[in-house]
Amino acid sequence: MASQFERQDNLLEDCVNSLKTCKELIETHLDGPERAGELSQLEAIVKDYCLLSFNASKSSEACREVLDYFNNESTDHDVDIDELYNTKLASKKQAFSGNYPEEEIWKEVFMGVRDREIEEVEQGTSQDDATEYEEMGDSIFCSNVFTPPVDPISKMVIQNPYKSKKCGHIYDYKFILQYIKSRKSKAQCPYIGCNNGSISVDQLVKDQETQSKIENYQRNTNTESD
Ligand SMILES: [Zn+2]
Image (cartoon, rainbow, N blue to C red; front, side, top):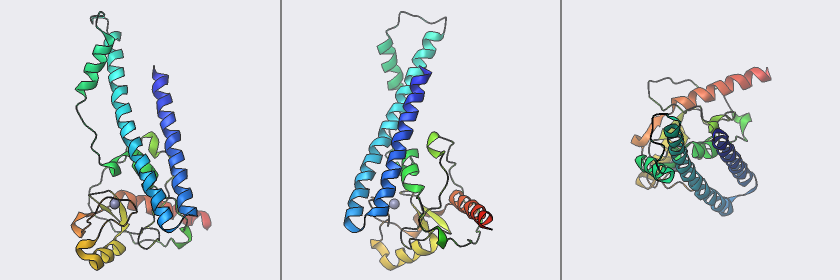
């Protein structure tokens, strides 16, 4: 049974890797409306995968609980397995949040942006503050090497990452600030296909986790090229 869970994880990881490749190809070879169209299609697929993965993990949990039940010597073994499974599954009340940017698959595909403008990296000024951030768990989807995210407005590697609390997208503070000021109430998240239709300054929080990763990355790259 354990190997079946593993196979499921591996399959999902393969799918996620294909989606990442897809995104890279779109960004490398397409422009304008064609690119936007393909990216929004890709987003729809990634959303499906997020939901699929959520449901799969719920049924895996229910399966494990059924196994545990039957492995326990003292339990009543005349119980109907299907019924028990359905009861266990139903007990997992927690519904899918629909907050895709918080899902591991989404983060993996859309936020570990592969950077083609590495030569533009400059040593960022470190800006420490005590802003809290969520830890990204050591899930199978986070095993890939970090590449610094690119700001959607300036198209340059982000130096001072701020994150929208609403959609989870990351921007360079300087550019998102200019953008919001210039569009005022009409500002929407500049990531193609994002459904966050109104973005404001009070929605932005310092993304300390990404900041640390960028600094680490830049430190390592600089050491290698010396
Ligand atoms: Zn967004």
